[in-house]
Image (cartoon, rainbow, N blue to C red; front, side):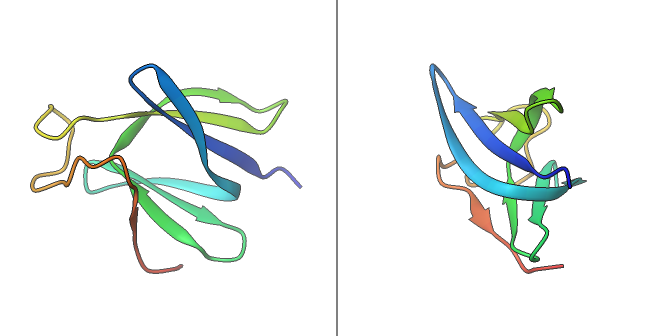
Length: 85
C-alpha cells in the first residue's frame, strides 16, 4: 500500500502535518488531504514536491490574500479541519 507522509513548508521551516494520506483533492483554493481512515484536513497550500519512492509530499503554504488563496482564508499557520469522507 502506498500512503504518504505530508509536510508543509512555511517560509524557511518545514514540518510534518499528516501521515497515512491516501487522497489529495483541490478544494476551495487549497488542498484537501484525507487519510485511509477518513481523517480529512484542508490546507491553504500548493504542492511543492512529491516523492513517491519514499511516500513524502511537501506542500508550500499559500499566504492569505495571494492569488490562489481561498477568499476569506485564515492564512494562519494552523491547518483547518474539515469533515471526513
